[in-house]
Length: 136
Image 1 (cartoon, one colour):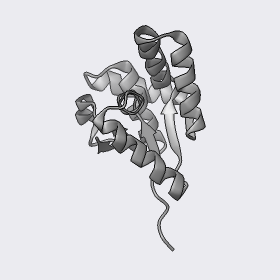
Image 2 (tube, helix red, strand yellow):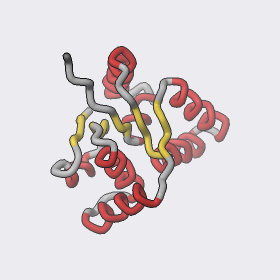
Image 3 (cartoon, helix red, strand yellow):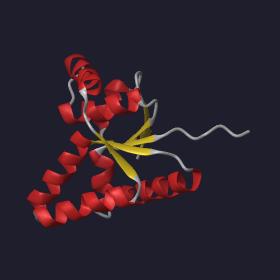
């Protein structure tokens, strides 16, 4: 019996590349398509979703940001709340590494869910020993 594919955690970098139609955004689109075909779960921390929202609201509008987040949910990306265990894990990563706090939530979620972290943000090189990163 084939092994079930690992779940994916999408970082805000990957989602913004996808939403912005960047070259690496096509790689994200392909990963999403494959995840649907294989019934692979896809997750994003609510903290990273907030990061995507504020960037889009600042660059475009709050309505555009709301629509983009609704579109992500429509793609089957589950937004995961930051409960205390996840927050503690993210805070531990922040205490040990020089990375943004939001990025620590993406890494913590990937670690917690034993998932691959999808990103192109080089900041995640610091946690490659703790998290499997799928580089874009």
